[in-house]
Each structure stands twice: as structure tokens, then as C-alpha cells.
Length: 410
Image 1 (cartoon, rainbow, N blue to C red):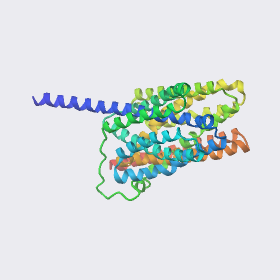
Image 2 (tube, one colour):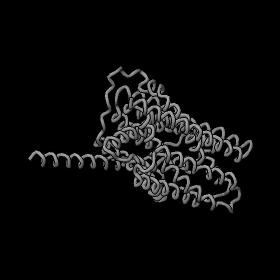
Image 3 (tube, helix red, strand yellow):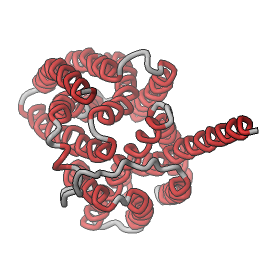
Image 4 (tube, rainbow, N blue to C red):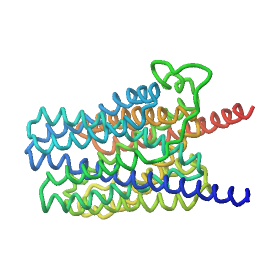
């Protein structure tokens, strides 16, 4: 009798966990659908619909990376001190919807600057917290984070397709309806998902800086942050120069659209393969492999300089999609493996702000001037230099992590 009860209880528990995982899956789909309906078309809306100049559009584009750098550590401190993940995400999703309504009902440049800042502040609050929660859920119930995150990529890809059709048929204002409904569904789903309780800290109270002060004492994390900055951070600026080169080579909008679709499709397929592989390869090994695959991408970009060579760039779209499909889940998994459970969201935020935000912005800014003053080749040689240097840091990082694991066992 007792055995039957235990079996029934275990089965019910598994069903509830599986249900919660699907809640995470669908939540990721609708969150990324909402953002994916808006962001890719935002710049086009500013240029074509509102008639903003290249300088005005460029200024608005440059705001988001700066907002990322400043806002994410602040959100991290708030979340650590008050454990307010649900309140932050629900409030942020509501604010994204409201901000988009203002974007599509105003046409003043200074208002668009303000709305972009507001959108960035609240959008950048969401990803590290939701990723931190889903990583903890995945670890606790033996799932791969990529099996949840893949639904975000599917949502983004679906959104770019659907929003493009909606804009052609009903105009740009249709985006705020698509996004608004998606954010509302995401809120309802997030309120239902199972949040894994983090271990309470007994040794001392959390400082006014949250877990940031503690995480900077972690030498393995600091080494990782340097590694991520000079590899992933720099490499994430490559699409900017890739886009510039496509313009210089007079690529048509149809060709650019095809390349983006191919890249996102490859990203989704790569994530799916990663899920099937399970734990056959170490996360860090695969992350290094993803970084190495970008070396031929940079070399191809360096030498393709004629319009008739455009088709060669299809290889770049495939390699870039492969890289993103690996790096997005793997880098988060790796952070979760080198910091304490209660520091996961903070680690993701710091990586996002410093490695993905600041280094991406700095590379784009300096690289843009180097292209203007010298050539693309110089920029790509410098990027290659950073990538090869990061591989040296990778060896050092691997040694430090092994020492950390031995110390934890003792």
C-alpha cells in the first residue's frame, strides 16, 4: 500500500516538474516573440517611417549597450537584496508593453531617445534573472538549460517572420499589438512557473551591493570574465562590421533577410543538437569550439570585397548561427558551474554588462573609426588577435576551475 502511494506520489511530482518545464518553454517563446517583434524593425521604423537621419538613428542605437552596462548591475543588486525576481520580471514586461505604445504613437526625436532608454532599462532586467531561475530549475531537475532556451530562439525567429508580414499589411503600429499580447501571455506563464528556492546564506547578511562584492572575490569568475570579454564580447561585435560590409557590397534587402533567416535557423538546429548530445562533451570544450569556428568567419570577411563574392558570405551566416546556438546556453551553464547557487543571476548580469555589453560597445565604437580611417582588414586582424589571446586565458581558466573543484571537495 505504502509502495503504491510512493510510486503515485513520485509520478505526480514528475508530471508537475514536466508541466513547469513546459511553462518555462512557452514563457521563453512569448518573451522573445514580444521583443523579436519590436527590436529588429525598430531602426527601420525610425528611418523609414519617422524619417530620422543616419546620425539620429546611430545615436539611438548606441544608447542600448550603454543602458545595458549601467542598468544590469543595479538590477542585480536589487534582486539580491530583496529577492524580487517575480516582481521585477512582471513589472519589466508591463513597462516594455507601455513603452512600445508610446514609441508608436509619438514621432519626436528626443522622446524616442527617452523611450529607448526606458525600454533598455526594463528589458535588460529580464534576461539575467529569467536565465538564472531557469538554470537553477534545470540543474535541480536534471534538464539541459538549452532545452528551455531553444524556445526563445524559436520565438524570435517566428516573430521576425510574423511581424514582417504584419507591418506590410497593417503598418508599424501592428507591432505594439503583437508585442503587447506576447508580454501579457509571458506574464501569466511566469507567474505559474516553478521557482527553485535558492539556499539561504547563513554565514552573513547580504551587503548593500548584493552578491557583486562576493562574486568579485571568486578568482575563477574573474578569469572567466576576462576570457569572455576578449572572446565572446569582441566576437559579438562582428555582426556590426558584417552588416557594414553587406551595405558596402550593395547586398539587397532580400539577400540580407535570407542571411538572417539562415543564421537563426542554424542557431535553432545547433541548440537542438546540443540537447541531443546531453553531457557527451564538457560545456567549456564546446564553448571553445564555438569560438574557434569564428576564426574562418573573420578571415572570410577580411578577404571578400567584391559584390560578385556575396554568396561566399552564406558560409558566415551558417557559422554565426552555429556559434550563437552554442554560446548562448553554454556560457550561462558555465557561469552556473563556477559560482554559488545564490550568485548565478548576478554572475550572468555581470557577464552580460561587462563582457557582452561593454566590450561589444567598445569594439564597435573603436572598430567603426578604424574602418573609417584605415580598413576592415585592420579591425579583423585585431579581433583575431583577441580571439587567439582568449585561448591562452582558456587554459589558465581551466586550471583555476580544477583547483576550485578540488578545494570544494576538500
